[in-house]
Length: 259
Image (cartoon, rainbow, N blue to C red):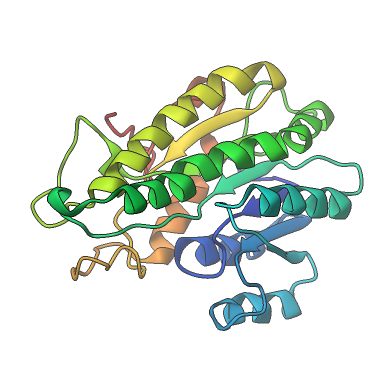
């Protein structure tokens, strides 16, 4: 199994939790990407301090203002990333930004459901559209045959909570709108894999596990998985994905999650 050798990577929601962990581990790879783009809502805000410290030490880390629920922000981010790449393509887009609310189904509202779909499902759709030219460029430039995350790929951070077949955890975490938004994200990932395969772009949904983050601990339980272990596992999985895996739904250990 080879290392992930993407020349350029963009991670959304990169100021904390899994997103920040991905940025840290990408920078620490034996052959780190030439460019790591870290998208976050408020690059100069208090919640981005750790990201700012990393950027001061790593000239290949570029913090990008990005609100994935805002189409104008997405287009501006795509333009800024394109400027930094200077005519080269973007190899790997990791749509990690997401939100969740613990709400029983009888208390779900139009506003909450709309907010979660906008960030968790529509955001990755619009990101894929906006960055498609850069992803296509990366695929065209790459000497790699077939599909690969080192060539050109979209990785949508999903959740086993979006599986219709596997509904474990329902007793302690209802998360109805979150589950629905992630089920829709899984279908989006499949649709992207079918639409973008002809351009040489691999597309998958990825389950990071139940991770010790602010979101993962939102229901008052301590998740079993650390950010480090989740991210190490996911990067190992991403390095191994090939043409046969596009459109699938693996977890951080490489096991296929039932849909």
